[in-house]
Figure 1 (tube, rainbow, N blue to C red):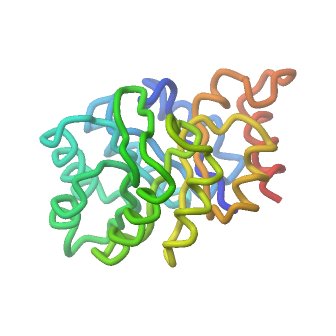
Figure 2 (figure 1 turned 45 degrees about the horizontal axis):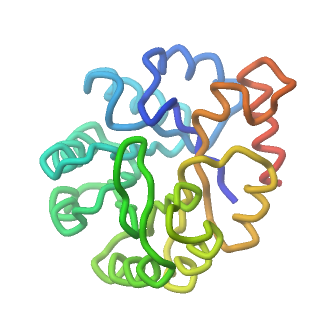
Length: 221
């Protein structure tokens, strides 16, 4: 299962993201991402360029809540050449913006709301959304399983897996090795962690960012 390290905290890109990227370069992480808010587009452009220069796959997750902001973020993702765009719910419109580019799309299934984002909706709603999104041409979904307000997180993961042939990414509030193992058993292909690494809550007795990241990588093996 792939670990996507998000250079984010409290649902926004950390302001010193370029410095962080330099600090962790020795770990040779293969999946690195950021959010569409927190730093200006010029920084996102440089961050995406540097991520890809390391040989990693780049991800940008949309957390903007309005339709206008979401579509604007999709345009930014295309312009700066992000590999994989995560999040958002305006699927048809985003796919239209990305058409002809190399950026693949993984929308939110279910009923995301608020900021930091929470997830409403039943397993059946998630399953139906996943099937519909894939039929529309999405490469997979970005499931906020551990932000769920109406269903058990792993029930949502299993429902998404039933519907998907593409990639199932689980994002948000993954903070323990047990959660990572549970996600793998339930059929997730990848997961994101940002805040739990930056605030040291993943490995509470370790002090460095690199130590936190090594422990997450160990849980994936």
